[in-house]
Every structure is written in structure tokens, then in C-alpha cells.
Image (cartoon, rainbow over all chains, first blue to last red; front, side, top):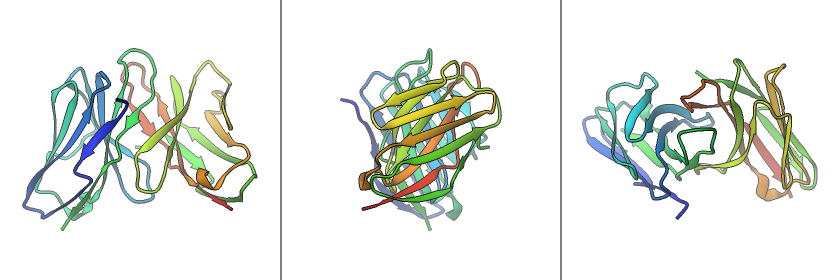
Length: 114
Length: 112
């Protein structure tokens, strides 16, 4: 299994809603990433987890709350979002912690905030 | 903040022609990677070049790295309509964090 699976593929939510995005990989990767991508822009790094611990938070607003319950699963909890948070949210994983390695991306969750 | 600036922003070529896109970055890097993204989809890794390498090949792809100029180029030879996509460089510039930052991207359109 060489896939990173993201659910849901599409999500529409109001500004007062609470929702979550889910990312799963069964490749034994120990680093997992959340990126946010606006249309015609590059992916912007949000969070990095290494061995289920948050290692990088790129000054992301607290209305985005990441969680890594185990080595295969990464969640992004969403609360009180703004319309400008509408974007494609991409999850990625990498094989190892030591040394360079490629990122394996999921297909993304497209979020629309009304 | 973005580490890499790519040019051109957009490129339109005929099938069979070569496509070259460039990436410039600001600080020293450990390695540089190139990714491809079809419209609205996830990114796919193409090739990784380490800071002590100057050139790498993979099929129709050729990547060069010039650390003195802080720049890299991606050449796609004999392009096909299926190569139509956005291409991004990603730099790992902080030792030990594996914090990959993506460049601005080049949108390539290959006309059949």
C-alpha cells in the first residue's frame, strides 16, 4: 500500500461549524505533514509531525488544530474558520526521519467556508 | 514564506518540444526536489538532487543544481500532452527539520 488517503474529498462548512479532515497512510512513515494550497499558488506548510509529536507549527491560527493519534493517522480539526481559509488541504508523509526523502501526497481535501 | 521562485510562471509548448523551468532559492539547502501537480490533485514526486550533486537524470527528466547561483533547472525532453501540469521545486533548507518549502511553480501546457 503506497497511498496516502484523505477524507473527505470535499467539505463545505459554515463559520460556526466544527469539522475535521482525516489523513491515513499504512506505509510505516514516521513523519506527516499538512499543507494548505490556494488556487494557482504553491502549497504552504502548516504542520509537521515526527514520531507522532508536533515538530513544526508554521504560526498557524489556533482555529486549525492538528492531531496525530497514531503513526498512521493525522487529523486536522477545524473550528470557527473564515472564508479565506477555503483552500485545498494536502496531507503528505515521508518514509524516514533521518536523511532526505520524498514526500508522498494524498489527493487533498477541498474545503469551502461559507 | 516561500523559499523558491520559479520561472517562467507559465509555459506553453508543442508536443515533442523540450520544456525548461528554473527554480531559484535564497539560502543554503540540503537537497532540492521537483514535484508535479495535475490540476487540483495531489503532488507527485519527480526527482531529488542533493546539495553535493550537480546533475541527475530520470527518464525524460534532467535536473541540474548550481549551489553557487542558488538555482536549479528541470528539463523535460520530448514533451507529451500528458506532461501538462504545474511543476514545483521544494527545498529542504534547514538541517534536521525536513521542512520542505515549495517554490512558486511553473504551469506547463503541452499542445498536441
